[in-house]
Structures are given as structure tokens and as C-alpha cells.
Image (cartoon, rainbow, N blue to C red):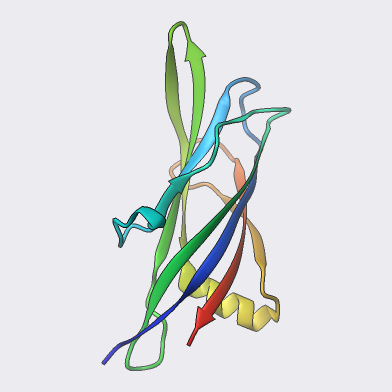
Length: 145
């Protein structure tokens, strides 16, 4: 028997650093892959790259349901972030995928309880990427048990 727990996740995408470009714009598409609901996907504004860094300061408030299995463990629930770089060449925009990040939201419930803080802020190295850029994300889970 499994039990559902629900709550709201406040996620803030803060910045991307070590960007190997000095021009162009960047944005991030995010989604919860287990859902097709509109509130479970979104994207940041297109922000300019300045001094090899991008400041997003993007807030997302996401209603989330997590499953607790019969042993009392939270099941994995992922959120995906895809980081894109956009440059204008001539009349059209060219998009290049810089990398992605996949976070397990169940780990944030544990981390917030263990660290004794509501907000967990970390920097993540992008996956499927040829560059060493890191994305800073903070999360504030508010779960209803």
C-alpha cells in the first residue's frame, strides 16, 4: 500500500557560472517528467550572459505529490532543468543545449529535515555537457503529511 503526500515546492533558479561564452542569452526549461500538467513545467526569461555568468533569479511555485511506499520511504520524484544558450545569427536565433540537471525532490525533503533549515541551496554541475558550468538552485519544500 502506498500513501501520497502533497505539498508545495518553492524553487529558485539563481545563476549559472563558468559559461564559456561572452555574448548571447541563456534560459532554462524545467519540468516534472511524470506529469503533463501546465503547472509542472515552465521556463525562465532569456537573460544576458555577462562576464561568463547568467543571473536568472527565477522563482517557481510547484504543487508536488510524493509517494510513500509501504516501508515508509519516499519514492523518487524528479525535476529536470535544461540549460540553453541562444545567439542571434542574421535573422534567426540559434539555440544550443549547454546541459541539464536532474534532481530528486525526495532528497530535498530529507536534506531540509536533516540540516534543520527550510531552504536548501546548492550548486550543481551540469550533466550531458562539454562545459564545467554550475547552476545554483535553492528549494524550499513545504510538505503536508
